[in-house]
Length: 167
Image (cartoon, rainbow, N blue to C red; front, side, top):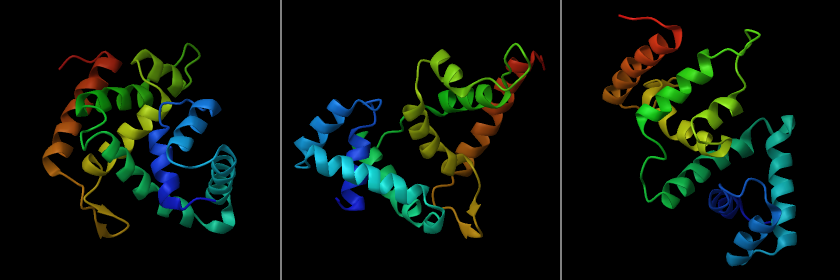
């Protein structure tokens, strides 16, 4: 099994493969990882992150490595604009289907021309920036009060549009 650091790098490189095993294997091979080792590593890390006995330790170790690998792959740029993040976030939170149930998030993402993996990257980037100044009682170093205020303004505007409210 490969290291968790290499696993995070490969996962970031495979972000747009949509689970296509042949494409994943080609990316792994380009990094010197055989198809068998990649399959075993993917299964192993997935199992560890899903194991309640692990208590989230593996996932907590993986996520910052993965997010850093994603940022490097993007050249440090945001994966989406704050405006796009806010619009999709609002629609995912508020939209209802014809039966009055919360709309399937995959349908919302498709309407906005994106997919689940790309959304996770946007969410992972923007949530710490606009979320809360503290996380579990510790300062959130990524929190940006100016961006957080802009998010709240944009969110109110988008919620008004979705709910048909004119101010």
